[in-house]
Length: 337
Length: 299
Image (cartoon, rainbow over the protein chains, first blue to last red):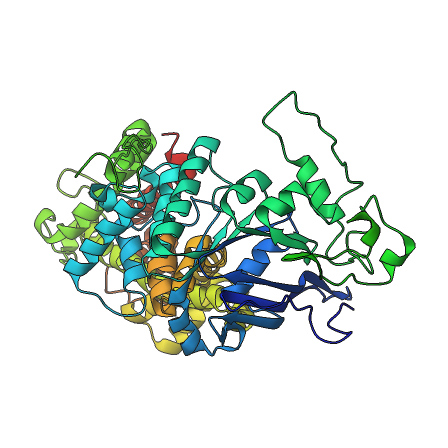
C-alpha cells in the first residue's frame, strides 16, 4: 500500500491562496466478477494530492490511462471518488449531500475534449446556453437573451448565430459554445479536460488564447488536463505529472520543463516534438507499454519502464517530496535528480 | 454587430457545414427512393379512403341486400359482396378506420409504456436489473399468445385489444429505448448538464427523450404494421372485437366459410393489410436510414 497505509496521504504543503486542494484522492473501479471470474479492482487514481492557487492554471499531464481525466471528473463529483478530500474554497466537495452539491456545481464547471458529443445535437445554441443560465433558478426571457448574446461575444461567436444547431458549426466554434456554456454560471473554477486536443493546431491556438484571455479578464482558476506538453507549458503556471494513477512530479511550468526532476517527466519531455529539425535530440525511449491498472507494479509504479530503476524501487512507494522550493518529485533515486 | 469581437478574434471563423433543413433532406430522400415514394402514396391512399369512408362508400358497411349475395367484383360492387349481400368495398374501407386506429393507438400505448420502462431502466442503474428481467420475461411469451391471454382476461372490446397489443409490443420499445439511453447517459452533453446542476427530470426530458425521437419513430412504424396484423389475427381467431364490427380481421374471419365460392371476401381485406403493412415497413426502414445522422451527410 501507499503512504496512506503508512500514515495518511501525502500532503502537498497548503498555501493560503489555494482555491482547490486535492488530498489523497482515490478512485477504484470494480470490474468483472460474476460467472466464476474474480472481481478485480482498477486503481484509476491512487493517492493523488495537489493544489490549485486562485487565479492560476494548473496543468495535469500524463499519457492515456494515467488517470488524469478521472481526477478531473472526481473533483467535480461527476464520478464519486473512492476516498480523499477535495477541498474547494474551504468546503470538502467529496462530502457534500445531493442538494448542497447541486448548488455547489455552479462554482465549478467543465470543458470537454470532444466538441461534437459535448453539445446536444437537438438543442439550438441559445437553448444550450439558456439551460446553463436557468439550471438552478429561472431567469426572465429578456435577461436570458441579453446574457446569451454577451456570452457568445465573449467567446468570439456572433450572437446572430444563436438560433442555429451545433452541427452548423465547426469544431473550434463548437468548443467556444462549450466554453460559453461553462462560463454562463460564472464559475470560479473550470476543469478543461483535453479542451484543445481534438482541434487543428491553428484552431487550438485560438482556443488557447481565448482561455488565456478569460483567465486574465475573469480571474478564472483552471485545471487544464492535457497530454501535449508544449500546450500545457504555454498555458499553465504549474504542472502536475501523472503516471498510472499516481503523481510523479509537481512544479512550476518553466522549471519543470527546463529541468525535469523525475525520470518519467524526462521521458515525457524527450518525446515531445521540437519544432526545429536541426535541434539535437536525445530521446529517452521507454520500454514496453503502460502496465495494466489492474496489476500495478509494486513500489514505484514507473519502475518497470524506468531506465534508472534499482531493486529498492520495488519495495517502497516513493513519497512525493519537496526537492526544491515549490517542486515535488516521487522518486527514491536522490542521486539522479 | 461589429465584425471584430472584444476577444480579438477576427470574424473569419469558418462557417459550419452547409445547413439544410430537415424537411428538405427528407424530401430529397423521398424523391430519390421511388419505392419509398410508392409506399407513402399507398399508405396515404389507404388512410384517406378509411378516413373518408362514409363519403366514398356507396353502400353502408352493414347494409344487407340478400338478392345480391355473394356477387363477384363488378362495377356496382368493386370488391364484390358477402353472404348477406353487404358491399365488401364499403366494409374494407370502414374496417380500415378501426384497423388503422387500433394500430395507431397500439403504437401510442406501446411507446408510452416502453419509453417509460426503457428510460428508467437505462438511466437509473439501480432500477435496471429488475426492469430488464420484467421486460425479458414479457418477451418470452409468443406475441399472439400473450395478446389472446390478455384479451381473455380484459374482455373482447376494441380498447382492450389496443391495451393488450400495447402491452405485447411494449418490451420491443423498452429494449430499444434502454439501449439508446445507456449510450446517451454517458455522453459529455449529459455530463455537462449534470455538472451544471440541471435537475434530473429536465435532463431526461431535454437530453435523453429528445435524442430518442428517431429510434422511437422507427420502432413506432414497425409496431404499427405488427399491430394491424395482430389485430386482424385476433379478430380472425375470434378473440378480438366482435364479428359485427367490420375490421380487416373480422371480414377475413367471416369470409373463410365462403373461401371457395367467394374468395374476394377474404382477398380484398387481405390486400389492404398487405399493402398497409408493406408500406409501413418500407417507411420504417427509410426513416431509420434518414434519421441516422451519419447517413444523412451522404445524401
